[in-house]
Length: 580
Ligand SMILES: [Zn+2]
Ligand SMILES: [Zn+2]
Image (cartoon, rainbow, N blue to C red):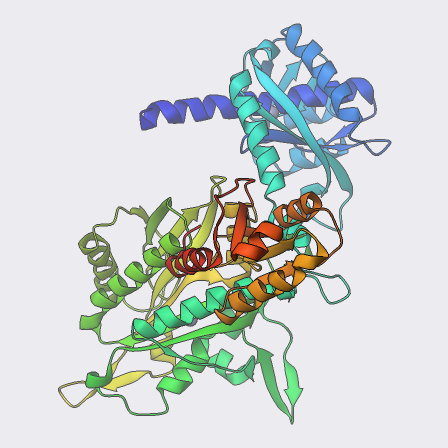
């Protein structure tokens, strides 16, 4: 579909969705004549409306409201618009305190009102011509929402709905929602015993359980090896540092809302680090650096702490403490292009290795507020652009979306659910080298400011695990699976053979274990499938006598009987190749 046509279609859908919210409000008003109305906008794929009602809604109310909405749609009530003075609007909506507040906030003397059936709303519009234009909708859920998002104002009840222009599109969307719920990383994390976040320990703070830690270690080992291969030095820096550093960096000023309160150590103020940059700068600055030494690349899986309001915390994707796969490159201006190309290559290699194939690159340019001069900005932005073009990568420009300290390239990748996740980011920084006087001695024998690049390729361990969980629905590729092989003995007399296989696999670094429970084979197989273990080896009399194994996959597929040694070789290859 051409871009223009799609845009028109998107606008039409949005108008239809917004109109559906008015129809839902009319239905709610018919059930609760004293209902007070908040706002009811269109959102992605649907709409919501906020209500102040005499009793809490339950999921059982949704079909009733849907039925009423269907009646309103069937009677094809026209939407009529009219303009009114604020005065008149106040009179018409006198029983609606939230609307009165909205009227007060509107800048113009005239406001517009929309009516369909008995329902009158303050609204800018536009709307569909009549209620019969709503083609396919469904009410999805009820949630609490503070009036105007303010926790000091009343809590209203919000009903979410989805709406599409065809029944098929709606059905398809509902199926996607179901799949998304099935792949919700919080649910999978609990079911697969990977991690927990506990109120008692602290919201937004992640406890990595043994199985989640196995996955994390596999990712970290791979990440470290790949970085060392590509010329990075791995470093470690402490979690707290003197507040003075963050004053020099400008974080205390620009970043204050994300910082935790300082702690006092022997009369000095220390803070929890919100980023790893300053430690790496301090390591760089322990020596005078010559142009010959550059580039210097310091990589760290560095845990940082940032304040997030409890209301926005979400599983592993929005937390208060997380480990970035961070690195800082210190280079000469003439090296920047090659360095950026190197990071792009590494980032795409990582995305590909972890099994993602859809991604989008964005080049963000100078924002309104910026550090440095326009000339340096232009040079750096052109360098990023050239790096993208030389690497033959398609990208889009995100105008004015650079960070205040420099332009950047972001890569967003899509999970199997089609959801976009923030992935690698490459940011040039003109600010910190200047504030901390980070320099090198050039060929001319003089000190020059170094070019600094901040970059992550996975984002954070926490968010990346959430992405992987959603992408694979918990069925990790073999190299990441917490348990790679479950050996299942048919009867107790096969336990010796089962343990022998387990020991041999373990000695090769393969994560194997025996299910020793006195259960039937079928129930052991089902358990392994629930845990999404890639390989099950079923061993009975025949296998024990002939040193073979019957291999089952988590999909339910059964492979031909094979010798144990050939199974061992094939799983070793799968792990080494990082394939499923
Ligand atoms: Zn409206
Ligand atoms: Zn940094």
